[in-house]
Image (cartoon, rainbow, N blue to C red; front, side, top):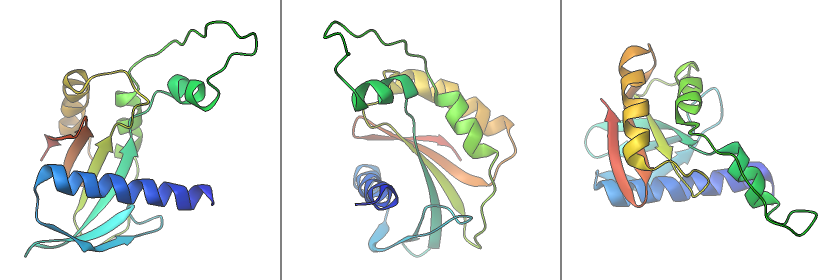
Length: 152
């Protein structure tokens, strides 16, 4: 299984969770995987029409590395330095441009590779969304089976 295929499967599963936990009337039977320079997914939102989504995992690279190789070579304890990567990750997405005629929304999500809790992530990201020029109509955070609207 290719990395791109695995990424697509993860994104589709995350989006399904987002729809389930948000209660928004997206029609999951209309979800289409897209390729750059388009956003990741396209889906029908009730009577409104199609909405494009760019997905991004908020992930601490140090934790990701530790999870991919959990056993230290010497068999001892592994110490990991962590820091909240949310600002850097989202800022990177805000700097990108996407080609689509549809409204674009940003879906940030956590998948266990970040220790920063949502109540810290939210005030870190939300002000940035209001102060940077970007293409997103709304931004969301999916963390711990809850959906938080970050910006609209």
